[in-house]
Image 1 (spheres, one colour):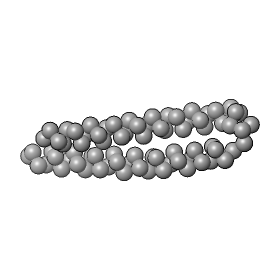
Image 2 (tube, helix red, strand yellow):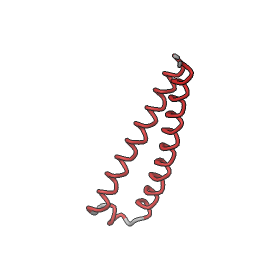
Image 3 (cartoon, rainbow, N blue to C red):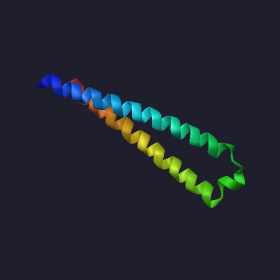
Length: 78
């Protein structure tokens, strides 16, 4: 039973890390798109919306990173 719970947590942690990596790649791509736009566009409503989107996605990456770290800590206690 103990081994089964540990394995489940390891699978979940791995999944979170994979999703985090994919999301980080998406953020990097979108940041490059934003940076390649003119300053005028960046200051427009659409530019501000994209910047807000990027900030929210960065927060998601941070939250997922924290979740994976917390699972790792839990595994160390098991």
